[in-house]
Image (cartoon, rainbow over all chains, first blue to last red; front, top):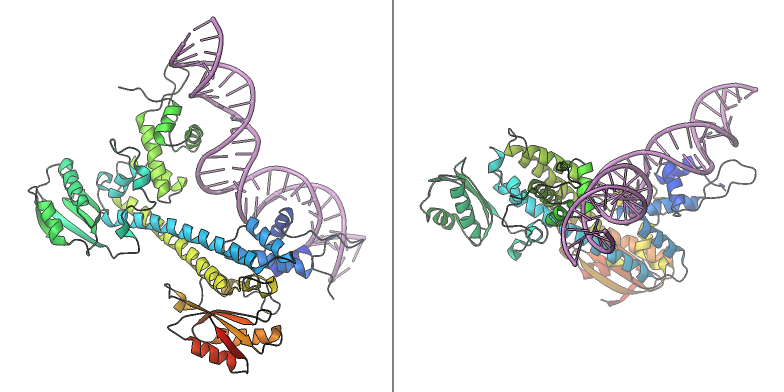
Length: 231
Length: 231
DNA sequence: GTGGGGTCCGTACCTAGGTACGGAATCAAG
DNA sequence: CTTGATTCCGTACCTAGGTACGGACCCCAC
């Protein structure tokens, strides 16, 4: 019958550091055992090690220490019901799903920006920087346009987007490039577009279910520019 | 020609609080403008408001202030290349994808636990608590078994799992319940199982592509227990 | 009995991204 | 000229989850 472990051994048994146990004691996640009479060091019962492992296990599932505190209280409660635990797990699952959604929105926004970025050349041609830089006259629509909750519902799921690059003749200035960008960007099915005067090309990210290259080329050529190469 | 805005107006224009601007100044994300000669308050140029908006925009995409600092430096760098920006965006996208993966693993683990939880009754019957509580004899395999990187590859994607509950006759003790749990849990296609002696039932989460109810019932009945109800 | 390592305890520090407080000065309106 | 709102500036505080330091003890082996 072992009386217990010293803090160092308990820490190793629980897979944490000594300081972490002391921290958990301060947080009242584990009890600080009394020193056995006459002894100078505290002895931790197996129960403490078990609690530490419980904590680490719950952390893996995304629970915060505060939530774990509740779970531990529940565990010690003789009238606690399984539904209490289930409820907390469900709430945490919702929480996790919300975080995933948010990250997926961010990821989709980044993907779109990367897809249309020329990938070389000066920053004035960079569509990523362009998207980040506020432009006069479109102030304060940032929140709607940004990363979160992409407005276009066809963007949900992960519709397989296609990326096309067109070499264009006839661009005379950055203004022309902007014109083309605006036109193409307004086409149905187009998720993002960038047009570089310097490179003389347009990069378009679009949904092949909703439009096609022909239509995009037609849109570009309508005002009189010429598409001389497609990639 | 406006000389600039006071800090309060600049804050409103940028969609942040006054204290946030001061904080950004301390972080050297925006410059602190000099006080015009003889004046007691500083006047912020439109440029500062633009930087603040840039910061907020980039934050929406998941960039940290440290990373934003780099992006801003890049923006001011005359020889900076679009590929520098693209590289950072790609790295951030990888980062976001890793976080999504981790959360999806956690979510899948929570789903599995919730699916097999009886949802009522004492905690000794609760499979969630059970999963969190370390059991003697299985020490230190926590990291493999926990939430992260679920071993079974058929768990990837999101195969539509089915959940079934069986009322069982013939369970004489918790040991019987454990036996059934072990048997069912080892069946191919079974993602999780819990058996409660108290409730006289088993809950199983399984992949309907890999197995079916008949097979599960057969497994339970093989040692002599009787399935008297299915849900 | 004397090392050397472990423990005890309080306290400070860390990251990230801000928020809050408080006294003094300044500014704008009436 | 007064009043109320801002601004200025330094400093402290907040969440979350620990990590680190330092001096004093204590325990075990040789």
